[in-house]
Length: 404
Image (cartoon, rainbow, N blue to C red; front, side):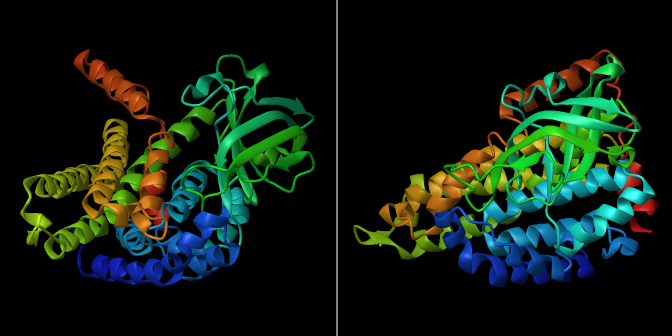
């Protein structure tokens, strides 16, 4: 989003572009091939301050704002060109850290945020189950009261960072609570009875460890409850909103170099005595990707402005996620078309980016689900009513309290 950053934000963007280029990109192919996660790399990223750009200084963050973090994320995404690392990063920062900052108690913030911000610990946000993906209200992980604490039983499935996470924020059904049964809990993954699977062998995003978590009578104390009983969906929907907007920011960063490389290649590559850029179909591929990028930029800017003001922007967030998924996939597919067999080779990053981009259609909600969200909000507005989202703690996340 060059052109919208002030001088400080542009400097932050430039700095983290170099971080992504120098620390992450050189080993991206290795992690993809090995289905690997590099904890030392994670710690190195933490040491740069990336996880805490917009987190409060008292927890080890830099105490800056949403725009400064977005500048860092866009630059880092452009530099690293590694969707595997980015998915793990967004899952921790935009889901776990954001939800914890907005809904956690002071004691929880003091305990959990510093090691996440420093990169010493890795977090996961465990929602999905084998029979429950986008339909979060039907989740089955059971929570029961046990004295002053709780016991959790069940399984979470397809969870980003689950195989390597040290800290897990999860959602369970407290059956004694009636209709407001879903509550949010946070725990160490080393808790007795909690088992982490090995990483699933997926087509793309292979640098992101995705797996399952099994809860076998896991005992949690009362301090593990995030927010209050029955408040789980509020925490969850808040995390979704922040994650979708920051996913858009990261895709803006990822798409720009794809377009730039396609343009430069088309100007240099000759066929039948002339550059392939002379062909209208090649021009069309590049112009289409650029147009989608600019559309995504504009909606992301609106989403960030609303987020900064503490406004509900769930419609914009769904639009951002839907546009980002489709734009990135189409840009990568057309990059391979333009580069031909060169782009199809495993030793060139377009092939990896294309596989990674397919995961965007599922992670964070499918395009079909986002259309459903947008439709429901449109109907509510048309009927002069709003969905009950005034309890989303956007002000706690982006207001003065967040930077204190």
